Image 1 (tube, rainbow, N blue to C red):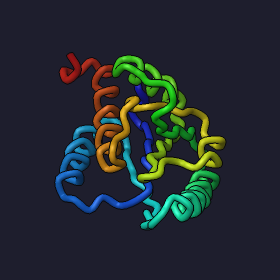
Image 2: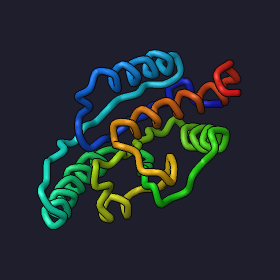
Image 3: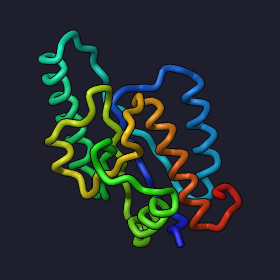
Image 4: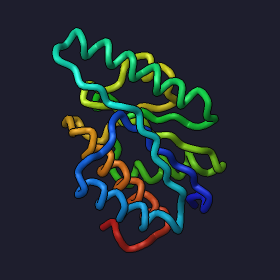
Length: 161
């Protein structure tokens, strides 16, 4: 059974500016709140003009992410489109296993350029939401919805069919 004191953070590159994304996230936080504490950590997303500059900024973002995760004892899970995909049921089992001992989980959602290899090397697990590439705002919404779905599967609540 999922731990009632489940503690999950979602670390993202960039803030969500559009209200419709925030409304969806708020709705899932409300649904999750009886079962888990969800928090968000945001790293600044900097604009870039060319691929060379993008790589420099991606490295700078990695340094900020690493400072956040190195200071926190947690299971670190990076989202990367090239990694293992889960069905919703498989993800629920994965999340249940990772939270069984009350461990803090931090999911990392990269920005438009993805995550730097230095971040990926420091994670405990890498997973993919899809082989498709999503805008990072949508990835954040999909992730929190799948966390909610995983909880309802484990708790045998009516949501997943």
